[in-house]
Image (cartoon, rainbow, N blue to C red; front, side):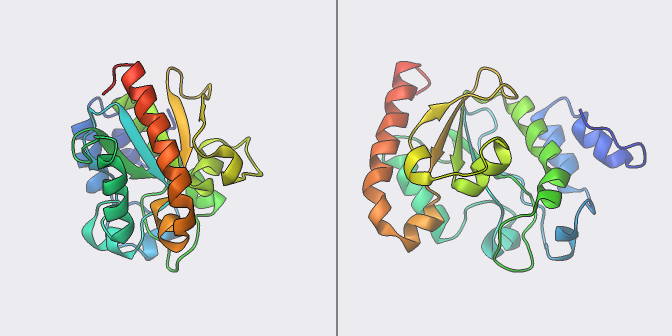
Length: 209
């Protein structure tokens, strides 16, 4: 666990023993750990069920998410919910949705390494408390920051495949196209349906759904 000798509130968040306590403390935390603090309205923590077996991780909040304080609440969120429901997953019950970083950037861009380094302890604590069986990584940027060994990511090769990481023992990770990308390039929806079916088959085989 990362400890900051000069930030008691941060230490309390990272020492939380329950998910509810973690979320309450992080929600009230005036985080200044990176420059994203200057462009946010809300710290965006999650949407869904922290007791679910599936964690979905995207890269960052956007304007809609920043305003509401929840991830994937715009058009991309509507599409994500439809994708989940197509394989009988209820977004508010069967998954928890979050991001690599908790605050939106000042413009539409991917987070920097410094921003991810500042925020990643929150994601690691979230994963530790939730103990998911499956983590879905939405898009190449999410993959890059969760698995730093993958520097050259080709979604055509990665999407739809399961893999594991030593830092998250007992967890199966899977890469999928980000719904925001699918809105821009609907041609990948056919491939995504195959990836969703692979996920459904795995969940059924492991009796997770």
